Length: 163
Image 1: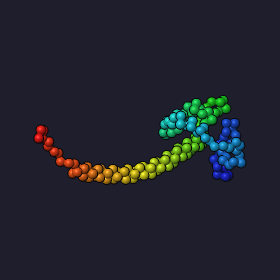
Image 2: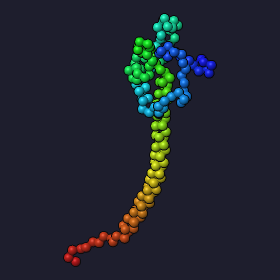
Image 3: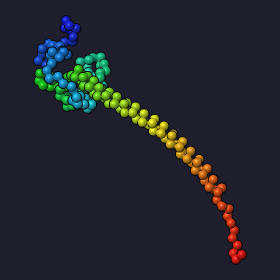
């Protein structure tokens, strides 16, 4: 940590530095957009470091840097010889957040559509109830009219031939 309390690192050229976030240190700032979609192709893994790196063999979680480089070369750091060395987890985290925010907006939009559909369904149900009541009333009226017509029919007459 430096005197500001920010983590320090050594870059690929062997220089000590800090990761700055202020716009003062950045050019060409623009929204990430669809670039972050590449992280959906990443394959998280569990692993153990080789014994010489971690004698305790604690379980680890992360990515294989060579696999990440195939998905997006900007997500890895290379050593002085140009070989893939490590994953830029800070960049992966920013991409994850971008993808999460896109999904969150999609969910919000779908929720708005569902609410509108629920309101439409409620109106349609109400309309169906009104129509069902009207059809039942009309059916009842038709039965009454049919009964009245039946009563008004003249009685059958018998006609005798030749008389």
